[in-house]
Length: 365
Image (cartoon, rainbow, N blue to C red; front, side, top):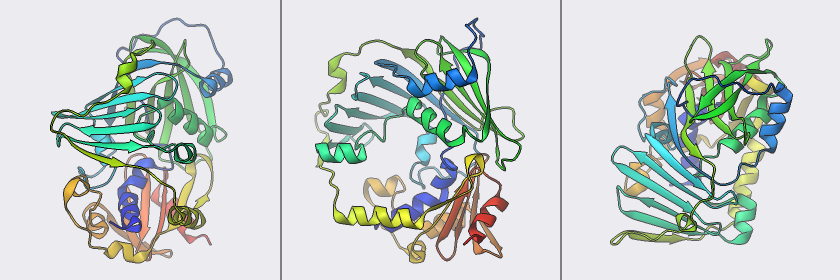
């Protein structure tokens, strides 16, 4: 599949999932006890989260979502991540990790030892070995993108919306049997957003986020929540970060590289993308090749099964709403936490905002 076609396929619903980077959240509490903890100011708690270095741990993660997305299944890249039954994460605290993701009766295992990444699917009995050159790992952080990192996610989230938020500490909670502070970010009255608040449960000892919840306007329960149900901060056995494919597994080896074409595409994407507004009502706008919508991708192999080769035009017509205005015409995807518009001439806009804010952003020169 051509890169531009793959990119536009993901943008159809994937951008709405991201909603300007605000839709990633972290995990359900194992209890709702409110432990007695020393008082801490919101500013001190934020600073401690940003500086946190929790070290080695292993934990079980669960994702809960009520985004109001259409039943896309695996038709859109990344959508299957929202259907995870559970995930077990192991980290040595120094860059090595192991992730076991359960979806129904199958499991995907991703092992990162610092220089090599193994990705194994029990469903297909296939394994991919990626050897990471030092220069690539430094420039791209290759191999780390599949490992959930609530600390990084929360830090980035705080950076995006902190200045346009009212930040407070709303008591305490017990998450994964550990006492935690409830950090709450609420958009200021001037922010035009679909989100009501973001809640981050911060471990009282390590300052690692244990749960992140996104709540939209008009709802009492999180639209998206990812949380540790169990976690233990302790040294991990070294053999957890090695992997040997099971007997009979089909193995494919890859070595990622950075070539001039990649650099050119990245530079072009940077030039074509613009942020309109800031804080909670930031809208990401840009342009993709209009003919990408008319591509006729192949439906075969693993990429076909996972939706990576899905027909962008067909996805839009199936899951999006046809809209038009002074800005032009196109397709609108709506969730509880964000909206995205893709125009017929290849422009796009997405954010955690009402659709009218998107249209205004599209109208700006």
